[in-house]
Length: 282
Image 1 (cartoon, rainbow, N blue to C red):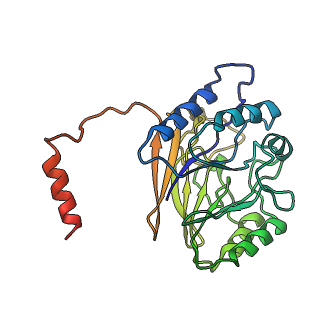
Image 2 (tube, rainbow, N blue to C red):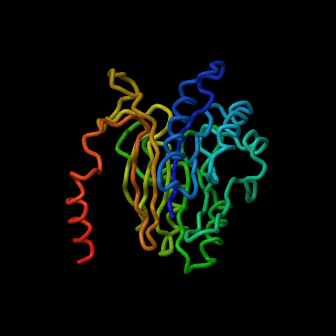
């Protein structure tokens, strides 16, 4: 099973521009996914779907996603708003008012989590949401699970985007998933950068954004003294591909751009391919 991911789309950042930069970047990412072989089985859009949480941006997003050749499952980020989202996407399930739901029509169970607290940049995961997740994890314990959420519950090292690991919501999430070996991976966004780590014994993959990215700078930051460091960079729009091989979730990161091609599979490389595949069969 191949799960594609886009995140931090921030549609509507430039709302009056018919050729908005973030829309163009999203289009490039989706074109890449639609044209690749094999084609993804599903697409996860992991939050910050819009920049302001407004109706018009969700309407545009709905139009963009409506003609894709694979199903799209969305979760919400800190730039989203539940009510306008629900107006445009009423078919997306909710639980207790939160956009949390289960997808179970393949070899993996996908549990989509809602870490939005409207008005707050960082994540949230209250007791109500935790109980929903605990109840789902108590079911079908023999089937592998992947969790999709917007906020990564880990420190990134980028000071102005960090999550404090002692925040109550992080501790609550950790307690909820502890001991559930059926969880094979966690897929998140929010940082606008590709990061690989782990959380409570399971892999955690953070995908870079389709919108412009956060610059990599691991120096501490002083809120009282601006130092001229880079903050946002326009690297190519990013996607992630999470491949479930039946035992492990393996993540690849890609960019939607024209790559400089140095070699192609032609007759000159056929002996190398044959030799490498023969080794695999030994």
